[in-house]
Image 1 (spheres, rainbow, N blue to C red):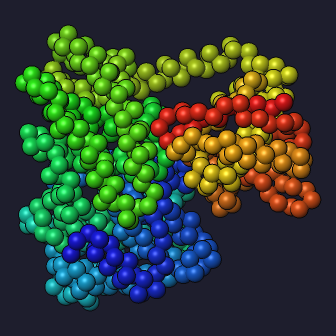
Image 2 (image 1 turned 120 degrees about the horizontal axis):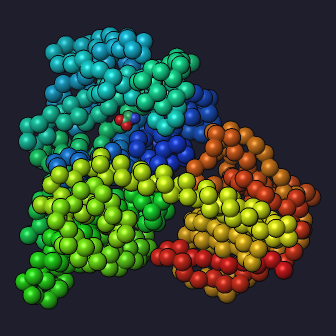
Image 3 (image 1 turned 135 degrees about the horizontal axis):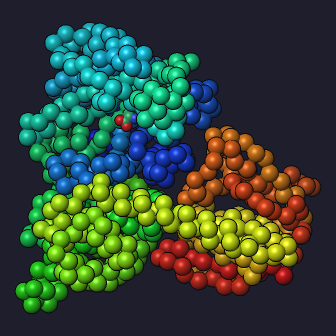
Length: 600
Ligand code: SER
């Protein structure tokens, strides 16, 4: 069975059993306390504590999905037979619809009947006094009733107790299913979580037991299951590694033969992850999740350089077409996945990749010269190379394996942390002594006069975003904004230059909203509540638990023209803005446009 058929059979199986099929959510999660989407349950987190909402949203208490997922925790593992950063996670979920009995029966039936697999063994929770959760006798009994001969292993909290994800959430014991791959190894294919509890803190707090917080039983217990498509395909297609399944095999053959296998695997994993991360709106930079994207891009470029470009140069040969295999891998990845994921835009992906490639290739050339001057590279030296030259840790390791023999990631991270603390202290001093009346990071004003103008520009910026989405479509997303008393500068995702007509239409929309003198007001509410409203939010921002949602409402018709998460300040009526004009529209980076707007 190829991967397309596996995906289809999974969704068909659960659809036939009353599950609503829900599309994958973005890799950029709603939950601000987690960086990227790591599990299928993330988009469903709220339904475990409020199952009635599932009736409203899905017309069912049971759902299934194939979720784009990304696990930074596995980055260092990539290169072996079965670890990945990006993967597709198939899962079925229930918010009070069914519990252990059905969840286990479904999983058994799907694996053995639909896919024809043999289960090697299963695990169940052995219980843990530390958190006051008993052994999961019930799951054991259910497994035995299905197959009296099944091998059951009892395991502890590290392996078979899920959650909470982020700063709080549902959690509970799990049962895992292991099947054999083509190399005869037992692979964990399915993790079935029984969300019986809610914990008002993080997993670390739960395990440390020192937070004073307690596990609370969930009113309605729920089910959350996750099965990595790639690992399952390895068992179904009887391959020895995930890279020999049909999900990767067509790409594997495109890599230069002289490359080492581990490096080939890293390239395939990273290129696929890059494709999806860019498509969900990330852009390489040194901030948080964008940094993850930049790291992946730089890693594959360093590999390409070391494994191929450098060798060709050393041989004195011309840089053949073969060195551009990364671009071709991007093309092939989009071709392979485009049918299932319609938001993959090859032109944008290639453009962003190329831009970062150009930047990093220059850095690489300088970095290599510096590396050659060093005898040994310890954490301090490595951090220096990173700091001044932009060489990531992995690239330093790859570039000078001998000189970095003793270099450990922990020590490097420690240097990084020290530096961050120093620079944070510096920032505070800088802004403290700056004399700005307002500095929210986004808005800056030196005095009362400037404050009035940036406030007008700020409300105009909200209207501008709403207007862009009206004129250019809902794919327009804020990428950043910067407001001074001179102008607002607004970056947003859009693939081409705007036409003069579009610019005029956007200005007209904003000015019409100003003419209607809409009431600008805000409501303060818990973040969880706010995400349920359809208010726009800036995905890159980390929001506090309590947020403000600002809206502009036409007081005659009641129509809401914009609604956004925002800290303010804003004008009270849009009439105060004056006249809005787009002074400039230009490219900011690949796939991102920049507008400068003024109020007159
Ligand atoms: N949340 C669990 C996991 O990711 C099951 O989906 O393994």
